Amino acid sequence: MRHLLFVIIFSLLFFSCRKTEESFEKAIEISTAAACKEMAAPVISAFGSIVYKAKADVYPTSTSNVKALFADKGMDVHKGEILALLDDVKLQVQLRQAESDVQSKKALVALAKAQYEEGCQNARKTILSIDRIQCAVDQKQKEFDNYKRIYNNKLKLHIIGGLSDEELKSIKMNMDSAGSALEQALLELRTARVGFSDSDITAAGHEVPVGKSEYEELLIQINTATLKAQLDAAQAELEAAQSQFENIKIYLEETKIKAPIDGIVAERYVDIGEKADSETRLFTLFSTDSVYVSVTVNAQRFNDIAEGCAATVRLGTAVHNGVVEQVSPYADAKTGGRTLKIAVDNTDKTLIPGLFAEVSITAGEMQLRLSVPKEAVLHKQDDYSDAALFLVRDGHAFLQNVTVDFVTDSKVFIKEGLKDGDSVAISRLGHLSDGCEVEVK
Image 1: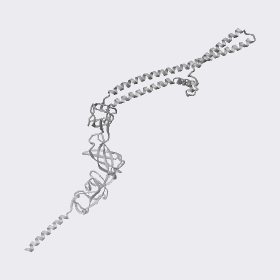
Image 2 (image 1 turned 120 degrees about the vertical axis):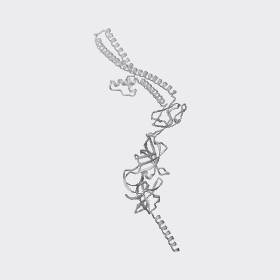
Image 3 (image 1 turned 45 degrees about the horizontal axis):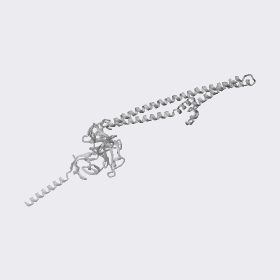
């Protein structure tokens, strides 16, 4: 009886131990996937902050009180749209004064111009008068020369007794009279030529022209120099008055505070009646049709990125396509990362500045690359630098370290540590250990 009880107990213990050993050695059921090559381009994933692409702080250019407001916080505005009006009463008074000054200066210019033109005409008249007097002098010279020839001939006749004293005296009186007329004409010519002679031209610093027309025009220029200077001065005063008038018009236009960009009013800082000067910020505007996503990328992958690289930005369920537009030329001293900005269209206004978005940047060319499902890879959170996976062979799982090239939403692309066609575990990775027995479902 005792022997039978011993046999029964031994049998129970034996089968119990055998059952425990069989349970311990039972293979772990897993799912697997095959590593395979596919056409893909490197993708760098990161998180970035959404920032405004353009920002504008609006200031007045002059000191005045706020007269009216047409925009407030949160309003969409367009470039050139009036946001506010400043009081312009003083500028309106200045504008009327400046306009009156312009009209006065125009009258002075007209007067100076008329005087100059009259001076030119008088100079031309003087030149014509000199020509007329010169002709008279030439005529008087001929008459004197003729009387002198006659007198000399009669004098010879008188000497031989062929002409009386009275007749010779009468002829001499005619000759003397012609001589006096010639001297009078020469005096008139010298008087008329004052300011119109060759010496006046050289005294003014010019060479005497050869041509008659050039000669006369130079004489006119010399004799109207003062009037021309008065005209130039009047025109300069007119231009200064017109410039002042236009400046005041600009100042008046600048009392209309306009939006410098398309966007949204982020903040309004003043109320109606408040005094504003060039240091008073009136509004802050942000552009909304396009935004930047600012991303810091690890320096090891930064060389793969260049301006123009395509990117995808995800915020919730919204997906936007963008392009790398700005690349930082230096790295952060603490993190070693470098910053880049991705320009993204935001006409639907779904990308709200200040929020964080998931970013995927395509870096490099499309080519055959080895990939495995994302769930096959063991890694630290957001860090694939020490990645590993379980390689399944002959019913066993072997822990295999791999070098990750890049990661997408569903796949991990492997640079080293795996071959095309290798089978890898994609489930129950937490239950596996290096070399354990597995059963593929």
